[in-house]
Image: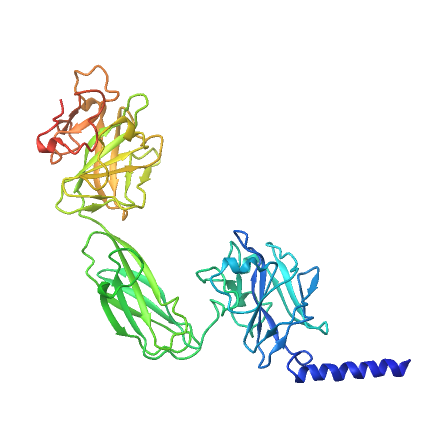
Length: 472
């Protein structure tokens, strides 16, 4: 009986040695396949999955390997081979292919144990039952919200949280592909883009493992805001980048003409012929250059609308250039704490042409209350804030206008006493500015609209500055 057991042990040793020679199994204690990526918190119906990578110089047959979580393991029963440096994706469902443009590696569907979003283990055993790799992950490591948890270095520690992070790939994960956060031999990146006085500063980092030689940097002004650096949008460069050792960084300064007011979008790019990762070669910076203050002036106020009506204010562009008011703010008088309520315009293009009008309304009922409100593309634009009111008091208040850089453009402190004293009630009657070039903080600059019911149709494309629709 002892001889039989000994014979079986020797047969097992000879069989294991043969398997290793054939490249099927690693040597005893040798790390071979490692857990390289984990999708434990997918979204939109994507199944959970785990990616393995072969870090040896031999192919590995995956049949009879086992994988599990903290509580259970399952056996892989399919015949599949992972080549040296190759990947294998183990998934709960083959439907994973519907969530990725391409998975250039074998995909094996197995009864993968449920991976807890709050933290769990992924354990990998070879056919001999040897624990080859294990990861005890936590959501604090990354990998939440539909992004996978990627391993930075396949040869680094599986248990070191510094060796793991969320995928930064455009798909949110990289099944069957090189991890988006893994270092490459050659990889330079734009790590920062900052605006200074008449200059844009670009930070460039060598994220590769070798010295980056011969890189170039360029700056583009993205006129159409599409995030694509077109050749005719180049404003500076290409400039040579100093040779960068691995992990080193440098700054490139581009002198720019930043006198153009409004929103301006810049794109910084780097180029290295040997670069193996192009996704981090571009960075977009959107800045705002203030317009000269005083060009948009308050022209009409309806602070006490009739029942069913809506508060609105109207501005007129008295300047000679179009003004983009996207992301601007209006506000009222500061409270006892010295703070005022600021209401932000939607971050959408709303351009007011010279002589054109801007109406800011609390809600969209302005379109049903006033029939001939002009729309964007004529003389002006209507900005709807989707609120119950503009917070304007019926007796007196401030109306202030700030651009997105918080430059004050107009400020009027109105009073209900500015209305025509002959009116029995000012409810539903707007205050109109007699001439936008008059001082807006004097009663003499304002009067009541009394022709018809309620305020003059805002943005009617006929304004009293042109001698039409004079207030009563």
